[in-house]
Length: 348
Image 1 (cartoon, rainbow, N blue to C red):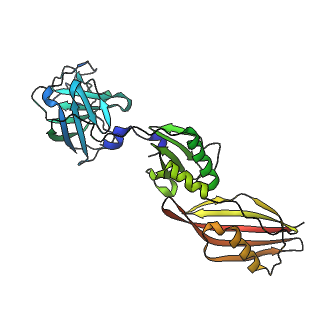
Image 2 (image 1 turned 60 degrees about the vertical axis):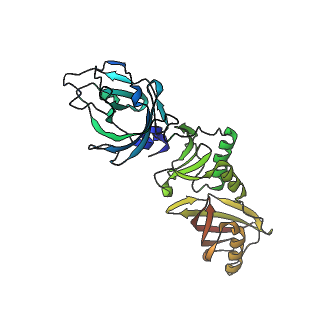
Image 3 (image 1 turned 45 degrees about the vertical axis):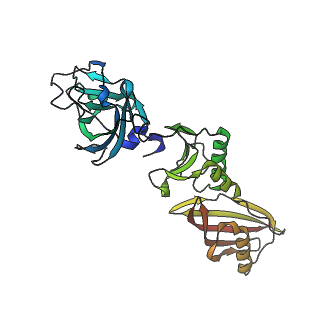
């Protein structure tokens, strides 16, 4: 699942349910749908506890899935945070009242409006009333009360979020956590199903906000959205993160840093960082270089040894390879990072 394909709220709760008329209801000659308004008996009003059963091959709803449904006055159905209305009778079948969700081609059909409540059949709307119907299963259960208050597992109304803070989130994440959210012309802000998000193709990671909370998905975070915390808390954490390299003593050389930072199998280039006017080390200054690395990366949570290896040396240039491990804690979880950096000193 990706944020680009996040499903309708009902489908996220119940799954994609394709619905078809059963053989006892649909005549083999039905080729088109004739719909008339359904009248739901007042005796149907109340709260129902339901369990999915008879899942057919290909059904995205598994046996045992549960839901709370409320049938209210005026033919209103509330289920999984959705309020459905205007039930219809299809092709004159008075037994089933169909509540349709055209945006996801889904119908929930309550039976029997004639003889009393039995079950809710699950159909694919576009196939109901044709002779190519596909029935995936049904919700079974009973009315547990006459209450029509609330809408089952209703989702609270989204909390309005300041667009400026959303922009700040993406900007700060791209600066402070570029190994996961590298700035790119392809990482554009998009919205779907209540989520505002950016997808970063080079790391295959999504960064999103929904109802005031921050989520990540993809790459090492897995294929389902992982909640990180409230927007304000995440912005506060990002503001405290330091990524700049501290000043170093002046000297007669230029230092260029290149290399990668890796985490959970993903290596991200640090680009090329140039530091001017620093002391030119000698090939024997391994300990001094190690101390410089420790100072420059003191916010990286260095653990273990810093390995410094001389790569080349001449009268005008000296090159060291630096390897060490660090860790950062973000929103309650710790990520280990592997640094592989080349230090190239060039005498002015």
